[in-house]
Image (cartoon, rainbow, N blue to C red; front, top):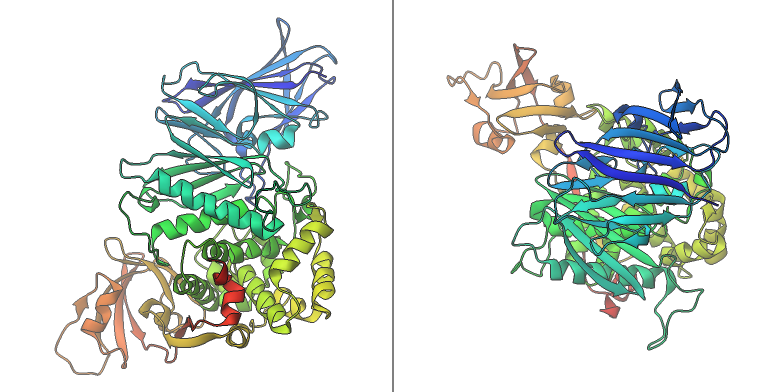
Length: 599
């Protein structure tokens, strides 16, 4: 059977246009093609077809008519069985991990942005040819697709088993840095675009290798010394590519079966001579956490996945209530596995965990939306944040991670098992494939000897507070409270570039009571009315200047500009607004959880 064939070339670097020729050896009569509206792992309809232009079709030398059926589908007025060729261009100017980019310095694309789906032939082999024409001489290729016939720099033809594999294999193009290492018998390649001369590539490779080995050990156990892994305990991937784009200011990642696309601040890259001691606030710590998160998805979501996503429907939203498990539990393990890999110490891990707890506890939306609802509503809420989102929604990443923490602490307290064992048993039970919440409950009961139905109902399907304090203290972690930051005491989220601009006013906060609104510019502070002071007030440039100008134990006035109108708002800070601080002394419980005894 002949493969569906896509030829990708640069149409115009400065116009940011890819040129795509799609050859269909044996089309159906009135063949339908479409471009996906979303990309797996990023739960938002992104309408990739808006960037497709100049679609034309030919059979032999004859032009064929095209009818657009809807926003992303076309019907080709062709004869059955006679080779059909389509040609079109795609505008590529989204410098994220989700779509496509092309300029004179770099190229990148996901197949969901460039490759039309041939309806009825999705399960046939799909061939991709990358052309060097029109590209700088020093450019090369990185992709996890299997090469068929390629040049030393990677240009040429690649083969995917089906359309799913084709669009799950992003492609990086450019004069990038490249390195490689082996982990668990699997060859891993790491490419970095946009790095500066101070970039320490050797450290990035060594630290990523430690992460990969820790995760393989987590899922499959340690191999016997000097012996290869058995088939049962072998990782599910035989190759892997990390593609990192370093830019001025961005952060994120998107998982794929044999690769991941990452983006980070250029300043987050490890630098030559940089200290090996990482804190929770270091940019490189965040980058390592991102790498750990996306690699964990190799097992948890790309293979072990929600039953509703057994087969992707690329033309519409694909709903599931299980993102709290697949994204949340991955978020729990990304920082924990950094500790187990020896890349951070106990104090740094607890500081990262503490940060997550505070993010959730300072989100009024946790009392409005359950984490299961947050999963289902990702398509319209999580990826479409506005000024009210923290008041009405909760993140399935952050609260899902705390659900995982509560399960882990509860299981360890019971003394029979832990969440690590649950994850491995789920992998075996579901054979690395579709999974339901019923599977989670069954494995919890099997390993712990008790039902977790009521706890999951409370922690996942209600807005009840999580029992974090009791469970952490039982594990030997002190759960302390201290005064929150000034912004949190006020209940504000803001930006401080050229002045103070209000982004969000949190529900029930001092700022809401005072009458602040999103979009306000906070200009100055003045004495409270009736105080009798002669001072006229103070210009406020940054929020941390506030205690310099007013006594925060007493009311004061804020001068704000809203829609060009000046307004005086009476402010009184709410007492008792706190944040969590975690600490722990060495203990057997702590070592068993963090596995520090293995270091």
